[in-house]
Amino acid sequence: MSTAPLHTEIAALPAGGEAQYVTARDGTRLRIAIWQGTRGTVLLLPGRTEYIEKYDRVITRLVALGYAVACIDWRGQGLSDRKVADNLGYVRRYSEFQQDMAALLGAVQGFPRPLHLIAHSMGGAIGLRALADGALRDAGVSRAVFCAPMWGLNLPVEKRIFGPFVARFLEAFGRGQTIAPGGRASDFLRNTTLETNKLTTDRERFDWMRGHLDSHPQLTLGAPTVSWVAASFDEMNALMDVGMPTTETLVFLGTEERVVSEGAIMTQVERLPNSTLVKVPGARHEILQERSQCFEPVWDRITAFLTADA
Image 1 (cartoon, rainbow, N blue to C red):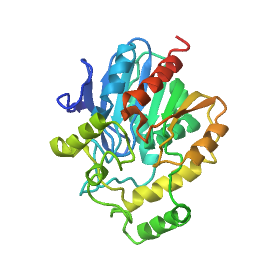
Image 2: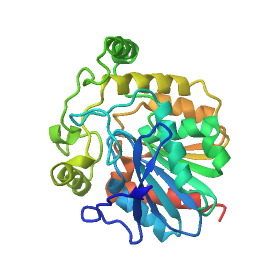
Image 3: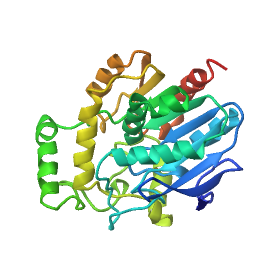
Image 4: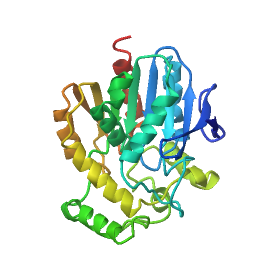
């Protein structure tokens, strides 16, 4: 374990945070940031392309509520180890992310209980797997919040059908670390505007995130690789067949969602025995990066949910 950077110059993070590098079982170096608290501990699981600093607003609010917080840069993004050059998102299989989860849980040993989970997009797939397989349940996770979880992708029918086969075919021929068909090496935000982007309707947060591309390009991530696409299809399909955890679960989905599949989320919510789905009017994919009209009601629900047993 060693000290890692935490870029407070670009994010309004609460005082007292410490970032550290920890090592996963396979030797991958991961960046984790922690804040101390006494009310319990929240594990914060970002989505693909994301990094710790992007969750400054959420971390600040959790710390203000008295919670300890632990947030991770998944392998292949943020300041964690990257195995592929050219700013591409890569993972060979999603079981690798479960090694990251184990490292995150190791970092909060001895932290106050109960444990809670807040997971976005790809983090929602990783988090659901860890709940279903028992790692988070055994660690004592009491409540889970999923924001636009990646339990399926919002794709045309032909891409949903043929995409997995194309990705696995290309991977079999040694193309796993190359850009997936249709992708661009540059970060998505470089190729869009506030009006056309799929992430947020908030001008301030949109400009703030785009500013990081230039001020801290080492934090950002470009297109997914063929292997990431193949692994993601495999995991999303597999999650449709796992036994569902009984954890109390709150799921948020924006009415303007265009990244993940509403149908897949509805299916999984129906399978989760103790879940509630909340539609967020006007919100796009990154609900926790949305304008106040969307974010504040969501945060009120999250606060009431996490503190219900307090």
